[in-house]
Length: 502
Image (cartoon, rainbow, N blue to C red; front, side):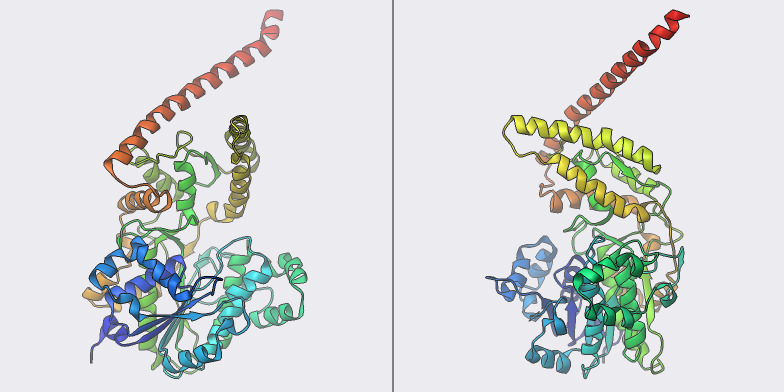
């Protein structure tokens, strides 16, 4: 019988929620490419006019799966969609599918979540917390269950500075059982009105409901072979299956995307704070390794033992600050800019609230109205002022994370990597201490250009963008000189009477 991770997944049935999300798709690709898994059940919401099987087959067009389908053309035959919705009672899973999952599944990776910071509390509770409880209840019916991995976040306990790989129920205003029971009895409006009182020190509904979900695991899942995986901010892939792959604007890559277009020019960021970024392919590898380690440990665990926690974050010996982050991004600005820039890309960072508001007016709001006026005069729809309103709103939500630094304990994750063989560490790579940040950002920004900007990374496209960059740079510096001259003249004009009176 085969041992090790690949042997563990051989002929196994895996159930994944959040399968259509950023991390979920990378986990599925890795399973199909690197293991002999028997079947992958994936929870997918039904959509009108579109068969769920068709939604899965649409992945064939994505760059993420291109290499997989070239080497294993029939790989998607292992995928079995299950109609469901984390907002629905009993997850919206039919009795037939529930019986199938209970009889067949050995491994569960629960990654479904809403990651919106401003999600109404009743929605965030339903998806992030109640759905976790329902998944735990479903797992208890699974006759062959060997491992259950709950994908949380490294910021589920962001109310403290030093976060160890353990549970922190003491920071919750009420435990998960009381909160869910209370919300079942209240209307959505009343639940949302209680947000400030329930959140306490948590900065948003996302981190709060993820903390509650961990409390669910602690209270109701301890008799299962279960563990928690806490990734930090998830960014573009490092190497697998393609370097720089990304499909969303969340996190620091979204920030740089705005800068690369010449739209975002001022941000409320402490440059000395930690950026806490981890590649998505590392996250997929840790999730799979966590399931393997959970299964290995289940026979040694005492009944109702506290579940293990595994954190993935930048290593203490290889940190990443926002200063480093911006330096690496600026170093790539001239190499592969975007052809859709509206201004020369640059970013100024401030931490003083009043100074940020003042700078945002001159760098964003005022130019936004000028740009929209030009659009109106050419009979086109104005849009930049509204874009800046959204940017400023998002920046306010991000402030708690762009001004502070956390210390994340990763001892369990490091120990798990040490338990893997040399070959397993190569195949399921996630060594944050050895990550070359400069190389990572070169790949990430090329990926941003290709997968988010939809621009081909061809010499012709890059040369076209570089020509545009040179023109915008000249305009930018010309405007700077003009502004300084006008400001100097106004200052002289205001002070002239004073000097002449003397």
